[in-house]
Image (cartoon, rainbow, N blue to C red; front, side, top):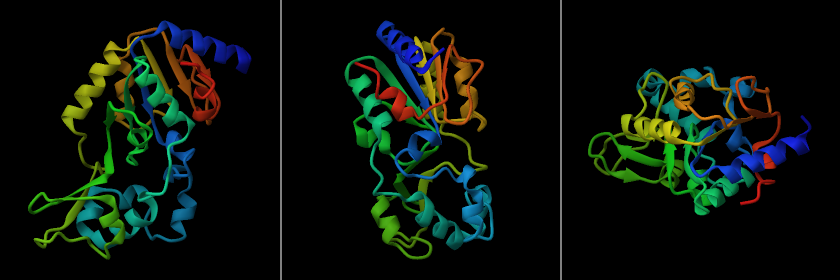
Length: 240
């Protein structure tokens, strides 16, 4: 099927749906200039003695906090990043009553910045940070300006509200995401290879017949419709 025919089919699916759910991964944010560390390990190895997956683990956070926060500020706090065409179209679809929820593996808050209201952040958000001792909230700007291990006014260490490797996902977030997917009449999966569990296992709860996968790296044989393209490029062609 040619790209033009695929877009027409996608438009038809959107027109027929009333409870769309979007499940997104790193590929959604790369279009806003936020790198996917899995595809650029070599770059990080030039500056860090450990691979990103090691640095972003609970064990490393506890044992080498200063090195963790150096990576965190340098690579994860991209506060100048702006929503792209995909973020904006999803917010537009929600406002029109078509999109029920966004489920994201990203931690940058760009969906909310674009205007999306119901967003399930499976891996948390860099925009929320809490003192481990007293629970006081700190924003991302505070974390970016801090040096070494960020400390609260009470002296406690401030931890980003981000799910690290070895940590479990928030049960309320997962149950909300599962419910949204199970009740969806269309599921769009974008920018994820669907290899990171348990998040990737969530799409198994979808029981409908309008599964669309948009990914620049590989076509999906399991999808009803699959695009080997940029998410923003595909979604921006949809009329609401």
